[in-house]
Amino acid sequence: MNRFRAYLDLVRYPLFAIPIVATLPGALIASEGQFTWRVAVALIVALFGYFAGMIKNDYFHHETDKQTNPERPLPSERLTPKQAIVPASVIYGLCVIGGFLLNIGTGLLVMGLVAISHLYNAIFKAKGILGSLTLPLGIGLLSVFGALAVSGTVPRLVWYAFAATTLYDLGTHITTTFKDLSRDRELGILTTPLQIGVGPALFLSAIATIAAFVVAFLPYWLEPELQRTYIIWVILGIVATVGTRISLYLQPNEKNGYLALKGSMIGSIFFFPCLIGAQMSIAISAAVIVPLLLITLFLLRTTRQEV
Image (cartoon, rainbow, N blue to C red; front, side):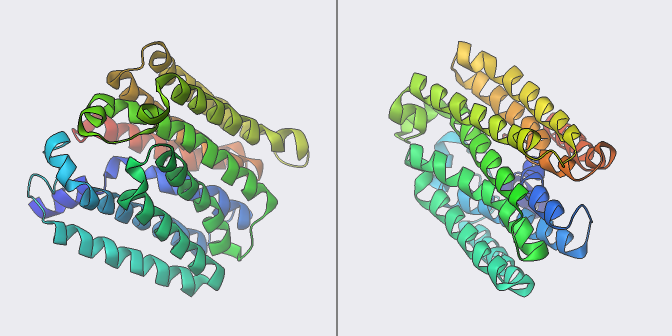
């Protein structure tokens, strides 16, 4: 049981909704709103691939975590590095196999996503702006993965989702690095604010986030045949994001960086899958989004784990 709890901490289970909502638009748009077995497989592969990436993150950074996060499973010796790297590698392998069983294009994309995850965790995370660009690209490509897994093609609407998700996650990644700003500075870990400066980093984050919302509005203006009620989810994402980032822009410190992280998680759950509402009724899209939001809020409230 103790080992099971250690693995739960290792995968950052309160973040489980992020890969799901990033994959949903591609999967459901490609399936025309039908919850098929392929949609289920796509969500499972995305979720476990995301968890494997979290494990790899702790594996590559467990020495640093001895100083910054000694309570985590590896620095606290609840798990050994081998007990982390082996299951993560096995999960990655199973995800690749699952992708190829669906179709060749999906398998190749899963290989690319695994490579992006590995490069981020092993190299780019501590390389400033490169890290802030790499991880969002992987998150954005989950919508493309969802579409390929379901239909083998990528509908035009999914490319809107890809661009909006990538830009939003770029803005999020930059702001959330502020939660460890002092520790990163002391340890010589190069994040975007430390590389280009606090002001320019916040400016870049704002531009990326605004651009994400603009992209999400484009189908509303350019695709009149779509259901326009999807815009409700965009607006809720804007409210959650802006409401929790204002304090960071006024006082860029670690406390406000962590608030921005939690706000971005909530904003992501509203925003990433917003375009499924362009093909589904508001009631059905709410039945997908609201439970994920409520479970995430419950986990954030009850867990002591730093996310």
